[in-house]
Image (cartoon, rainbow, N blue to C red; front, side):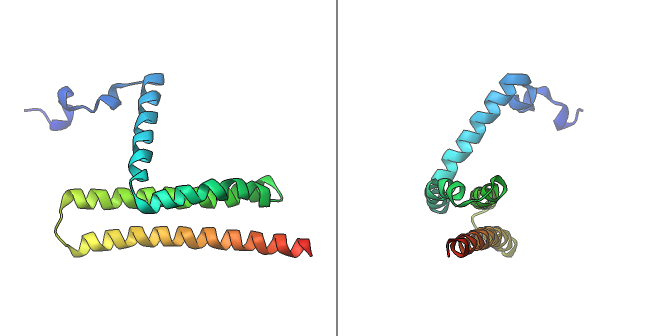
Length: 136
């Protein structure tokens, strides 16, 4: 009897692709993930706010490093939100009943989003304070 991992009929088709085909399909999966993220209110709000914050980051920045830091914190918030949504989806897929470990995992994901927001807020506040101090 063969191991389940060695059965070629059960292999993910993406694992068999190579080169441009693999890249093309991976990009499609990423776009599907962004569309799924758009269905989440928190991600949708963060994405809409980023439409203002990203151009503002490069206007506010005094160097490319500062611009990258400001823009990076905005993107980081969205990345962490998507990961939090993935965690919540996996837990909800596993079981709809309340469990302390499920709550813990969801709370940890939420804490990660909160910390990314604190980081972004701190970086943006420091940049604004510096810009206002230079204007005097």
